[in-house]
Amino acid sequence: REIWPTDCDFVYALSQEPSVRASSIHPETFTIEQHREWFARKMEENRTTSRWFILEEELRNPIGQIRYDRVVKGRPPWTGGPIAEEDGGAEVSVSLIPAARSMGVGRALLMRTIDPAKKMLGVSTLVALIRKDNAGSVKAFEAVGYKRVGEETRNGVELWRYET
Image (cartoon, rainbow, N blue to C red; front, side, top):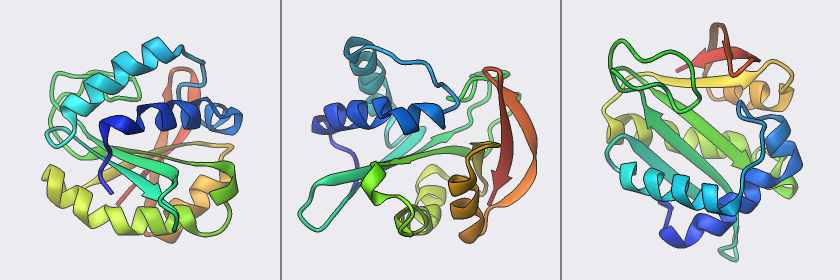
């Protein structure tokens, strides 16, 4: 489902989970106040330059999130890095609670959102920047058709660049 304003605390808790922090391009921690300010900004962008979804299990408890942020000329990508010289594509961010990992849930979430995200954001390319030591993410993205196209460094973190 699409994200709701009431998902703020879930997204914060998920983002602070140690393994999510360890595999993030931005591994530093942040306060709930900083998160709420960021969340409010991202909610403003949702449906214009972002698409954001929450994955729920059968009892409607959230177990993950996925967000696509369009690359916009003149702005840095959400992951940091150089100012975009042109519009193009969208970067993906995905995270799951620990109990939902290694069961194909991430692959299913990616597969179900690739085409809708491209259509909703009006882009033809989706970009995943994955830490080189994150074998689980590499496996999930490759399983749904993302191809490794290069390497990048953002915020001092060595990354694989995947596109679909």
